[in-house]
Each structure stands twice: as C-alpha cells, then as structure tokens.
Amino acid sequence: MESSFKSLNMDGHFDFKDIHHAASDFGNRYHFLPVAILYPKTVSDISSTIKHVFNKGSTLDLTIAARGHGHSLQGQAQAHQGIVISMESLRGTKMHVHTGELPYVDVSGGELWINILHETLKHGYAPKSWTDYLHLTVGGTLSNAGISGQAFRHGPQINNVYELEVVTGKGDVVICSEKQNADLFYGVLGGLGQFGIITRAKISVEPAPKKVKWIRVLYSDFHSFTKDQEHLIALEDTFDYIEGFVIINRTGLVNNWRSSFNPKDPLQASLFNSDGRTLYCLEMAKYFNPEETDDVNQKMDNLLSKLYYVQHTLFLSEVSYVDFLDRVHLSEIKLREKGLWDVPHPWLNLLVPRSTIYDFSEEVFGRILTDNSNGPILIYPVNQSRWNAKTSVITPSEDVFYLVAFLSSASPSSTGSDGLEHLLSQNKRILDFCGRAHLGVKQYLPHYGTQEEWQAHFGSKWDVFARRKLTYDPSAILAPGQRIFQKANTQHSRDLRK
Image (tube, rainbow, N blue to C red; front, side):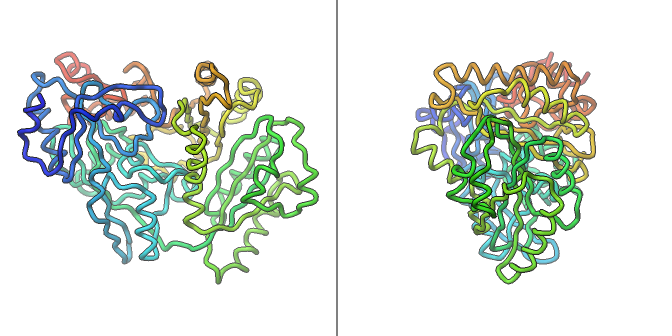
C-alpha cells in the first residue's frame, strides 16, 4: 500500500511513520491510529488521494479523514487504519481580501480563523460570525456550524459563506454556491465532512471596529436571565455579542474577574455574596471606534437600564477588537502552563428549544449539576431566522433556541482521579433526562453510536442526508470518525437507498 501511494504524482507527501499524533484530539478520549498522514501542498494532492482510494474500491480498504487543528472531541477527525489529511498543510495558499458591494475573503479550508482575522484587519474588514476559540480551521467549523455570541444577529459561520471549493468522496473538485451545485454547497455546510472536504471558501466580511465595550452582569433568577437575553436578541439596535453562562456554587466572583473587569460600583460589588447560590451571568459586548465612544456609552446605558440583573453586579472592561475575539487563547496559554490543556474534555453541546428551556434548567442546574467541579457552562439564545434550513445542520424547530455547552475537563485538580467517569455519567444523565422529558433537544457537534440514533437525530432530513452521501461519497470513504456510515459494501448501498 505504501508503494501504491508513493507512486502518485504529488506536490505534498505521505508520512507512514510519524503518525501517532493523528490518533488523538482535543477530546483526548478516542485514539485511532491511521496508516498514513497526507501533508498536501495543493488541492490536487487531496483529489488524487481520494480518487486513488475510490477507484481501488474494496481492494484498498481505506477511509479518509480531514484533520484541521485537531479540536474535535470524540475522534471525528481520526481514521482507524486509514489516511488522515493534515489540512493545515494547505495554509501556504495566500488569502485574498475582496472589497466592494459584497466584500469577502478567499481562504484555504485549512486556514486558521485567527490568521484570517489578522489578514482581513489589514484591509479594515473582518468576518461577521465567529466561534469563541479562533485557533480552528475554516473547513472544521464550516463542517459543523460555527457558533458564538454573534450568531443571534449574523447566524452561524455557515450562513456567511458565498462559495466553496470541495473535493468529494469520488475525488472530484467542485466549485459550489447557492447558485452553482447548490445541493453540494448546502450539504457540505454543517455536513460533518460526509460529502466532501472543504479546500477553499469565500467568507463574507464587514468593516471591522477597533474597540470593544465588554460587560458582565449577574442574575440570581433564571427566568429574568433568559427574559433579558431574549429581549436583547429581539432588538434591532442592540449589543453585537450576547452570551451567558451558569455559575454553580462559586464564590469570589469579583476577585476572579478583577484582573480584566472593573465593577461599576466597587464598594457595593465587594459586598455582594453569592452564598453558594446558582447564579447566571449575562455577557455582552458592543463594538465601536474611538470617535464613537460617547454615543456607544449612551446606547449601552439605555440598553442596560431595561435589564433586571442584580444591582451592583455590573462589571465592565474595554479591550481591542482582536483581544476580545481571541480571549479564549489567553486561557489556553494559562492552562498549557499548568499542564491542563491536554486532559480529556468530555464536552456536551446541546440546542434546547425556548419552550422547554425552563424544564431543562430546573432539572439540570437544580438537580443533576449540584457541585462546583464542573467547567464553564455556556447558555445563550439564537434566532432560528438567522439559520439557513437548507444546510445539513439540525436545530430545534422553534423561532428561538438556546445553545447550552458543558465545557468540562477531567483534570485531577478539579474532579479527582475518577473525574472523567463522573463527568461522562453526568452527561449521560442530562441526555437521558432530555429524552425522557421529550424536550426536543438536538446535539450540536453530535455524537452517536448507531445509525438508528443518527436517523433519529436527522429526523425528516435523514433521507436527504443519506441521498447526498450516496451521491457524493458512495463508497463512504470520508469522515469515518463521525460513525454515521460504514465503508461501502452491497448492504450499505441498499440501506442508503431505502
């Protein structure tokens, strides 16, 4: 097999020896060793590799996984005894920023969002929609959705793409958009890598601000917290970023935030005591340029005056636009210094309908999560109208739904030696409750063990999803780590046609 691949005409190269790092990811729970890693220099390298595997059929029993920055949680970018394509090797391709009526940046699928931010800012622009962590590849986030606090206004990252270049499971290189090869375009966006590998993307950009007013306020009542969040995302003139998180049995909040946030009323804030209560933090940001400071301050004061947070828990900070967007990277540096970045991360990401968010909160935050060993818990609403229903992403069918993300890490310092088992059990209890209570919850970054569970996840969209798989990756070569389809055989083809 090694000689078979070495015979291909390539600009990049295969590595058959130093392959162990491709058997791990940020989740650090699944470890599947490939037989080789492809370091492509051109799109043709990827196309030739896939075409070679496709044409060999069952005589070359291999699957192929595209790996970006390795930030998947459950082995989705791994390929057991297959080939892993290191997408960051394509980053040598130059980015192009196009200004005009519909400005965009043309980038490699293996480019990191942090690099795109720095490059577009040179031209006074930046993408509209982000993830909280920017050290991820374009292809990786567009294969899922890409969500952050801007999604209520601009939708996820997949809603801000004009055009894609995709290498299908047959090895074909296809340019697609909403007007050209639209079926593949919408299928690949949020398609979990099942229909093709994103090798280039044209991403919508807008004029970039220079500064950010960054605010946090606290709530002791979940109803007031969610009511204010939904109020803010419904306004036309509102904050540019709206997120929230849950704080369970944590004390010393003012001290924890003192390095980066200043309380508006220091004396009263210092007297605030959480008393071990579950609190909810609403996090907001307003983008601006220095000459707009007075106007922005007035707008913020007006917005805040209509909210029902606990008085004297208003914390403020003013930072650069880059520092705000890249804020999680600072936490990464600190965690790496402590050896806590590469621990297992049994994260759970859910999309919860607004109609059931209170039932969800009462059980999960009131009964299942009762100690302070958990990592950050994000919770914030988004508008369904900002999500394109033609893409492969599955969301609850309501006008407003919440992203709830349990970002736990199984580090000995926080959960003890059996921390991973505790967190996994906790996540299972949450999922079991959502199922029993019929809350209409959908997983974001979904992970299931059987095709029946995947069919239930996709629901009425399963037939379209399966038909696209048969069309663009009929041998089921791509993204085996998602565990949706098995490498093609006669039975597999029959199942897909059902």
